[in-house]
Length: 220
Length: 220
DNA sequence: TGGTCATGTGACTTGGAGGTCACATTTATC
DNA sequence: GATAAATGTGACCTCCAAGTCACATGACCA
Image (cartoon, rainbow over all chains, first blue to last red; front, side, top):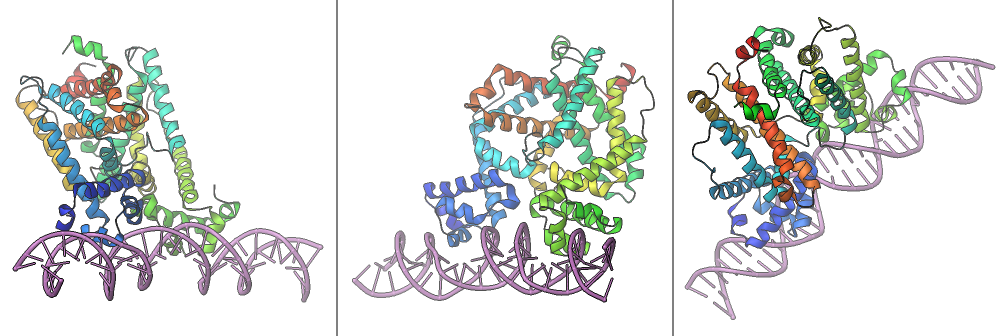
């Protein structure tokens, strides 16, 4: 947590530091973010920075509290349009309200998302070409599925690709991270429990994709 | 691309370098990976490293080609059990074969996944507590949905939470990254097209979650 | 054997990182 | 205005990164 000195600062100055930190983290991520640059861009001295914060992590965690506060404030004035929503309606409302928040506070949201969930394969520049191969393969698959009548032609191909891509990565991360904890990873992957989990995740995806949104609306 | 010198190396030595690089990237990610450590752990000199590779990125890209080659080789001997699979059966087979590969080559897979898609909120240590709040909220929601009869009680709560979490993040990344390209992000988010895209993504999720895997099997 | 070309080496340079501290300046208190 | 407390400052420290280079070693061939 930042020291009291920082919290006592005049708003303008404190905001300058916060802004510089946001810019730094959103451009460079956590590891490559430089305190020297934050200090230079916010017009304070190095010594002051260390009078305000323990270290880089401390500064970042402060940004988290800022985001949290602003989100709380934002959502305070927002209420679901109806009390009688089911869980999914509520979830949809929540996500959309969240996206409104994101576009109201894009800079801080981006900085924190960059650090917490990374650049993301889809949007990171560096490995775009590499990722493109997977995207193309998914795209071929879904177009074939439409041709074969396995998926409704009205399904948005790009959207389906995003869904397949998201799940490939999510499952892969899950398997790698959970699997590493096991003493025999291969055995664990082949176990009925693990296979069932993968199946269930893919069923959720498949069932969702097979139906079009129009079918969904007409058959809730 | 690595220089010819590197490719001429005796297998054992080349492998030592590759192994050290894998360890380094999988432990520290790209930014924080240190050539000095790679060099120390592979028993070659700094000078040699720069005779083999342009720089850190060059070394990492070589790992990508190694992975690609090993994957190609691995999948060469693997064929889908049947020719008459529909697209989704094929996709499921592909994912599972991919996970088998991951567990056969966990170290290099992890190294590359760590760099390309990051540690992931679910598994990264540093911000676990922060993320936990979202997980708990999702968990509450899905349990409520089950109580209300909106979701089948046989649905695996943890799995549903993973689905909701994955989509929150994916949609958020999508909105932030695409939105940043627009001149008026807020307007873009509120546009019919964007809202429709979000809706569709959520419908895919919702439709998948509402059904249980048993219902799915009995009603393909 | 001598010569030359490919490969290996680690001390060295440069640069920037995080972090400290003695001192300067401002602010508050009497 | 004098004194004390809080705040601000940047030169300086150490550390370690990436990258270079003059030289050493080995391999191969005439």
